[in-house]
Length: 310
Image (cartoon, rainbow, N blue to C red; front, top):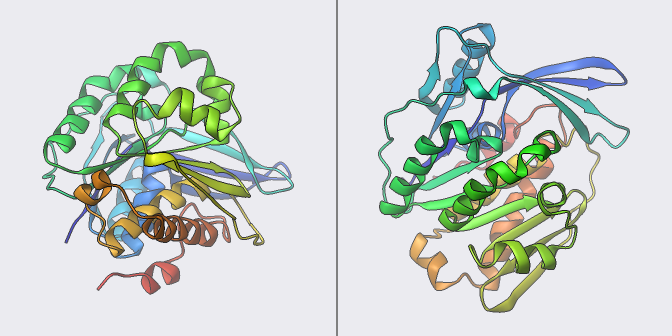
């Protein structure tokens, strides 16, 4: 069976509502997606680093509990696990404060075995961090060489806005590597001061990658792809408990859809049909909606079990 390789940061999310902590869970953008995929029975492995502390032990154990290989999560003796404080507003959307010393980032791993049509998911500041760029670029090059599908979630937070100029070369290289790019309206407002999907796609994305998904919270998901394809998908309104993992789980659902519907790299390069795009986006929205119905950053175990691929 095809597998998914995730690479990204691990954090420990402490969630606040009305000024009080109401939950604390392992997180990270690619991490959350991998947990949801693991719960849906998708074979996967995760590449990252974590601290030499109880939080780090929890992160690694949690990956394994959910069926994800954690052999390439490095623990350095003198390191502490990063922490994220997420403050939910009245709409249960989150504002974040991150505590991590990025200059101390290191990344050491043995390349996982990547086969054609496997899927690599990466994103966030981890994907553009200059300190670990050689390792990140080498993995992406290896994935492309072996014919994997590369899915890039931009996920660039306002807390790194002052570093936009510094990371731009890495960002552009990521866009070139990617077969599919997803980003939120918040990402591109921070990066380019643009809030219109077509302007973002035409001026910043399409030269590097033709397949682009633009999410904007409860507003419609926008798709732009080859041959002028433009699609808009309504987001079903549901009672949300937390939107922290919404985008990450959209990624998980979309990737699940690639596997469920047998979408290969060759098929992507030839151009997906409207019907195939519709199926993939529907999977993304379904995973995202389930995640938003709890405080957790991932789909429920019950939902995952119902989605297991035979």
